Length: 327
Image (cartoon, rainbow, N blue to C red; front, side):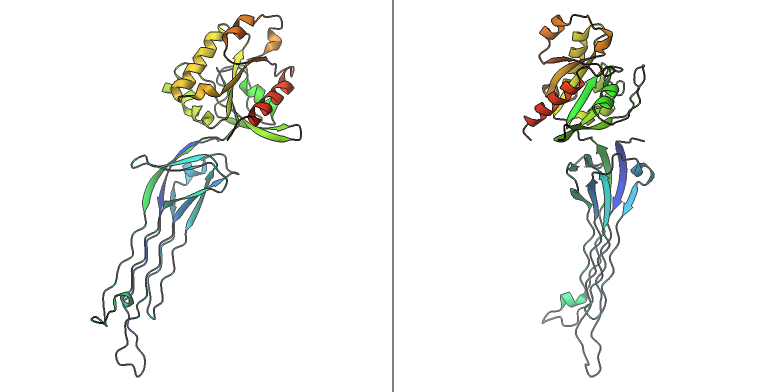
């Protein structure tokens, strides 16, 4: 199951308290203070793991607690630090503090990590308070409490190319032809209920990642349909391909609708539209789209995922376009 949002509670370990102790040895009547410091509590660390692809696990385990530290001991023995807790999250996870919405981290690189909750500092033992005027201090400090936070996790897929279109425009079929992805495919709207990623192998030279999101409808940026929940997954893409079903009516109006929804969701997002793909071209082999081509501000390519027409050329075009994009 694909889950791209979760709320978790993280609790760092408490620091250990300092110790009050005095040196007691034979023939030493008044030994000095030797109470050790308490250890530091363990941190809670979130780390990006490229092998994870969903936040599903956090639905069933929303609480994470690091180890508390040991108290200080006599003979100037410091308490052990608390065991830190490493929590793996998918690559592309955005972490926010629920209390004030502060962005703590956007984990976009493999093994990138952030300390989500810091352990409490250990308290000082009485040996720390010895002075020329107070040679037998009985003062000590308690360990600090570790931080507790409620975190909001939001997963944004990391892909090179995003497929955008109305429901049933052929996005899932196309990604299955470009890559080895196996999305659900059927001849009815909203077959795709979750984003799909596909890795496209290119001519033994390299590869790139394509993302297919559920179909966008009018008002998607306001939460209508499934678009609002999944538009976030094309925020990181380097380029977008708009798919138009060439057997449908009003193709230019459909393009304007999709362009508008992208713009209202995030300023500048339509600027990543690289080209328009007229899908299902095998159903309209004799149709004339010259008027549509003249109106569109980006190149237009005819493809058929059923017959394979235009798929190889599309792979070449995407690869060439990605090589020109400066990170």
